[in-house]
Length: 581
Image 1 (cartoon, helix red, strand yellow):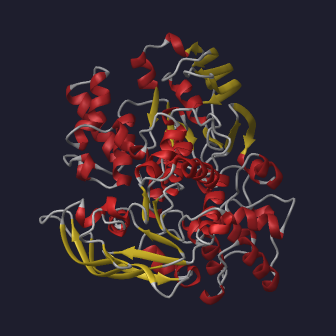
Image 2 (cartoon, helix red, strand yellow):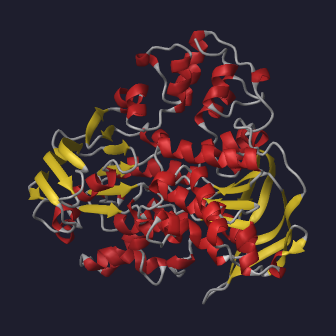
Image 3 (cartoon, rainbow, N blue to C red):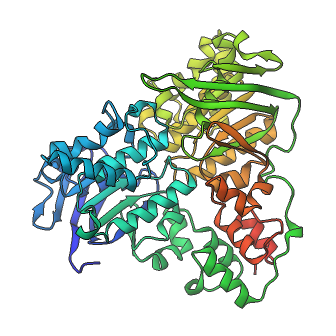
């Protein structure tokens, strides 16, 4: 790291409008040059606002009530428009799809260098380098971006920004749509690119700034900035920031799982481990035994424990996307049965076919060949209205299914379209709002709520139709630690108490471990594993073959007691190591 900061903020205060609270107030901070800096904090706590200041979007493009100074070297970012610093500061937005508009993968990556006036031959070389950086070398470069999976789209945006070779790369939750292996690879690449030199044929970013809600991703950073209450609550190395469990919880930031475990086991703050290898060495020094006999057979959350007859029966299912070039087989000869009351995690690497399969289950897509039955009847025999009443679908981005002027109107839309009115409609809406704890916000504009609240509005709108099953597509993306826990506890309660069948697409292995007793793993459009989550996570070689990563607590269990039943959660690991002290 250089002694000179890449970007400096001094006494910065900002509000989006005069009549709204300040998002950041009297902020002083430095972004170290030549370092990977991770910014953490609660949803709505100013992280994205801070990133928008680092490349001049605020205050030169996004207006508001701004005071203070922002300096990048000799450049005053408070008066320099973003396009003037695009060759030195590049940004990947949280809504990455808003940055995609090219007609092909090649055109998308080439767009930035072309606008910077880079020579064509050099652009070709930059495309190759950026595609390798984003782990997209196997992708057909003729494909339109719209045909890619969510994770592939996100990595394509990263490649497009990297191809401009800025000295600073800013990323707003870049791993939110990446599978575990892809996340690990991307973080490793981000750490490497800043040390590359001209001899490596790369002149890309030497400074990386990233926002994330996944605290494990911050462990490998050089520097962490934690925001809370409109200011900087902590700034320092991972060891300095991430071992302070009380401060993390106060800021609604997730506590590293191993910090939680060893804090409960009585280890002093200065010795709390952040990685499984450090934790395994500590276990050896503590001379404690790992006892798998205390672990339950099912999901730690008690979900999916009572199932009934088959709800879905899938036979020889296949779906092919037709393109203007070669067809793309997204689901390939899938056979699957999902029972009533099940809680199933649908997992696998990006582009494996998970989202396509979920849309086939809902009837949003019609199979190319094969059959989906719902309650013993072909899904195609149900009308769109009947499918909508029986099967709810919560999109990854709640804003894609919100449009009404108030929360109450939003929740009433579904049941009113199914013919409910008057007192019965009011009762359904009230019950749904009470279930997701949103009655006090019933008359509010949903777009003024936090991401977690908007996610609950979307869920309430589906619950009001009284479905048999809800399919969730990455429901916890963008939620802070508190929102994540609240949302998943709600979903778990609906499954346990109301018998709701849950099918959840997710890359969050911690959520899978806690809530899903059954996991279905997809690879290249096929189901390659269908069984108990504890059995899947108990086989490191199997996980590696599917490009999955077990939670840190499970990795530690493998290290200290291989070939035994692994702990899946912090609570289980604490008990298996002898209980709190």
